[in-house]
Length: 267
Length: 96
Image (cartoon, rainbow over all chains, first blue to last red; front, top):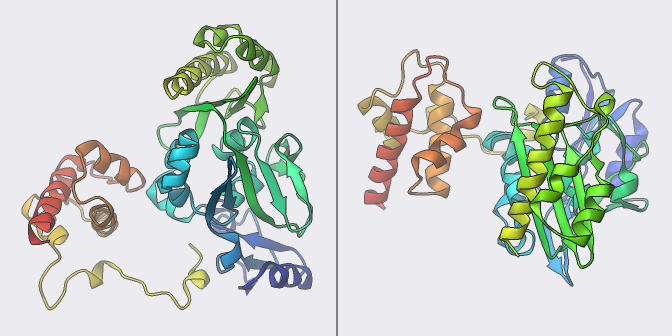
């Protein structure tokens, strides 16, 4: 690795101050993407501002039909939380399927969604469950947060503090994982909130996306067969070594069907 | 993780598993069940296996295999690794 500055703030204010005091600073959360990037010399930040010692950014709280998760909460803690298992079992399942146990012990929800990997699990949870993202500057709606491949609407120096999930009536998440990495070849989160249904797909395109037509169909009738009608623009669907666009589109229909079935099983 | 993040932390490596010249039950089980071939992956697998038993004293074979998803054995000797972890779990339960 190249030399870089390292700071370990104890509070969000201190972190922002450290970030501003170095050129080319980057936040270090779980480091599950950033550290390999440094080792491969794909990234050469001037400073790493380590968020791992800010107590306020960690923890899980439930109240009034909402689950709040601190940005630096590890995947393993989300997966194992009894409160989350009770309130949003699909979210616990999703967190338990990320990477492997080593990754789940280090990786964080805030780090994952800030990175916005096109095949990461958490973006599907944020978008499908309509989570709110609270930063040190503002509240961001799920629909505004993800703006493109590895891109979000976060500004330079902005820190996610917590992610607030409304508790759905029912929800289901099913992933077809790449067998080596665990990343989604395609994965679907389906959630019903009263009369409204949300469906988010990750892994299939350059960025997580919703399926408004399926959402409308499911709002009328929440049945697995609705997934058969999913039409995807194949020019927008990823085609690579692992799966052609046609295969991924087909896989997405299957994942959506299974996610609907999983949600119904919890009704 | 970044080494600097570990400053101030206590770190247990494979060398800290044996106590007073006596091997950890997980190490004993690996020896007993021939759960290592070239040995390259062994320290990581022993550490992961011990962490699993600490969280789940009686894991199923499927749970062991899922937990070890991030530990790759280039000799592909997973069968005896799973057997050893099950044996160590049984031994540690009987000691508890």
